[in-house]
Image 1 (tube, rainbow, N blue to C red):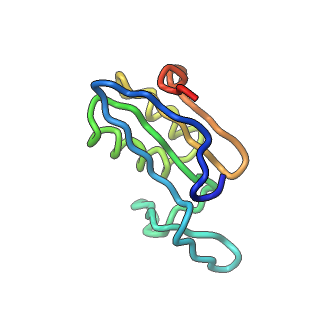
Image 2: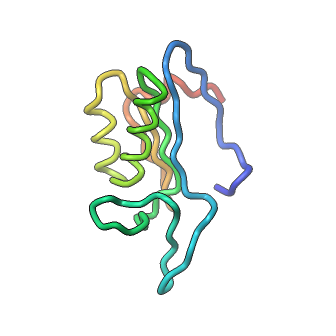
Length: 110
């Protein structure tokens, strides 16, 4: 997926939605691509292959926290983390695949 492209649409009522992504502002160090989201465990930008994490949750604040955390954790731990939060659903897009929680499809409309 490239910046400015759309792979689908979502419909959400009474909940919050947030996405954390790494499509632009990439820096290459020693052949590895780094973005602006930093893994607080290492102090380095995340370089786990994730491009985007989108979460639907009870509020926009909760969705934002979950999407950034899931992005840092990557697949499968990010999906497990989202599923552990009651009422939250999410999607993680990597360079090679898409992974989503069991109920994420309920919010996808196109």
